[in-house]
Length: 241
Length: 241
Image (cartoon, rainbow over all chains, first blue to last red; front, side, top):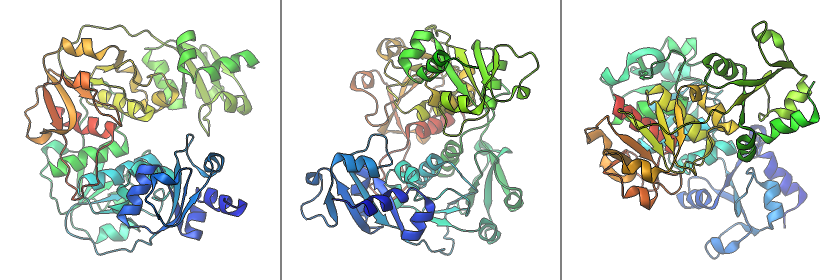
């Protein structure tokens, strides 16, 4: 059984404020939860399930709950059979490594951030830098969209001005940049992606030394942009191909 | 003012059943609505707004409503200042044109379908074929995600077995396909994308004569796939680059 206070705590974790206060975040869905448990990147605090048989015998911190309670604590419309709470590991700012890195300037959509974390995992980008005003990577919608990739990509929130000032090769995605298909891409570089509505901020734009663009093939003027996660995917593909 | 029955009709349009019955669909957000009005691809049935000054003087079919009513009829958590109802134009199955086309096998996520329609627009793919069990393109979340591209891409729901049987060059996205970066791509072709969880169905797989794949660069085994819309974006980029 769960007490009222426990239910309250879990539902509070929808808000960044409480995730930071308790240093906890929620993962849902059997597949993602098992991946988080096996990856051992984040410590399992509590595991709630309506069916204990889907986990290993002797699984630590497991509590059996009924469907009604699961529905109360879940962020999903149609909750699965389980929900887990993990401890947030404090990410430390490491020295920028060699190799391709990605930096996000104020990405606000949780689905976009989750998809970009998954893309970094796929294309072997180990570190993803996020400006302080980028959506929180422990937001339940972000966690959901990463499909477990959050275990394998180092997500670091930091001031991008300082970070980029110490980098020599910085690619930025712009509508009026050089055609990326005709650009020779240096793989020891940072790729900077801007906010969904406003693009890269003026202050950071000044630090970009390679403006790149994905050309449009549709004929009409109205088609105005690609989604931020899609643009990131196509650009990472160009760096790796 | 809106009558109870009018409010009921608009909220019913969230469901495919009622969109088909009334042959109407909803568009929200000032930018999208203006694009739909200007494109003239779909006939405007009704336009509801809390602020008539944001539209041209003499705008047809405009009704001023208060915020409370807008909140009732909106699909958004934070509704904008307006909502429009347009007539669904019956798409007809046209003879497959020359050039690159895309076909979707049972895509179920509205965000993915909307993003793929936007991608077709960007990469100059005029016709998008969807299997009958693909999510409805007039679903409000799909319309939202297309960002107006629904006006510029011909979306046709049809049996894919018959369609593909008449095509000679069919590319299919598979996890174990040929490395797309090392494939010479024929641009008079159909690119087939499968369901998010199950991929391309067995029956359609048999019709594919070019299996392609986006190679993974991350080191771990666990990273298992790319999102369907991201994969479509990267593959279309490869066809066009």
